[in-house]
Image 1 (cartoon, helix red, strand yellow):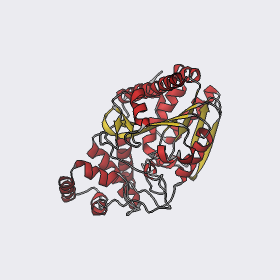
Image 2: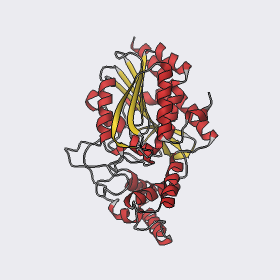
Image 3: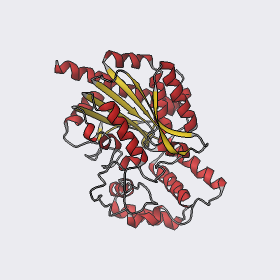
Image 4: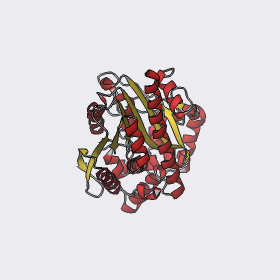
Length: 366
């Protein structure tokens, strides 16, 4: 298999490769159509394919594109696994159905945004909006610095952000920016005030594919944090949970818990992999975020800031728009052969370890 052939340059191309790989296996695809069109005036959709019976005891869900532009990586992983005969055989032998959820946020994927069309971070949006949302006290003081009126930013702007970093410390600063906020709808990492279109679509998919199984394994693929090419295995559920113990049995002691402060990610709420399961939680649930590093953190943040400024200033000229969009794509998708090889190798290892773990759990229960 040529790793580069699994990757795409646009959402439209990625979707076509995914649909073609499903067709090659004879897998039917169900599509949740998005209400808007894409950057190439193409149809946008969350596409779902399932390999394995509807009454399978075990289900592995592999999802891509929660954060839009990060979908280039996750889509390629899904295409590679659909073409991996050894993985398909291993899943069948373990009586494990595999569900491929392609492009949870197709709008962001196509338009090169991390956020949904509502300007919401989908991975902070799985909240109970009937309850008061938690306030992020540090974000309001940073918003005007993060998204200034003019772009590119000035040296004084960078110095003021640096002073906040010194004052708050690295972890608190990261939490202030990225943990989610409900005070500025035109800002970064906005959680929204209601479930987004993608939120409701993903919940419906989980209800259909995971409500009848005994054990759901969910691998959600992301990019943008950590060393270039390294796939950090992140557990984001409750600390001291049997799920954490199980994750480390399956994937090794290298599994990092964001809740315990070990991960490149800060503790988060409103995550898709936990919020979407909700009332449909099977008797056993194991979730892992697979986060692939791209560029250094300051460059990734600068790309997000620039793109949000562009979104807030739609009258910016076309050359600047193209430059900022390319900057964002490069921050979440490293278009280099070695990075692509590293991504597919580590992703295959993770899903195969999960199948082996399910086998061990089943054997131990007998």
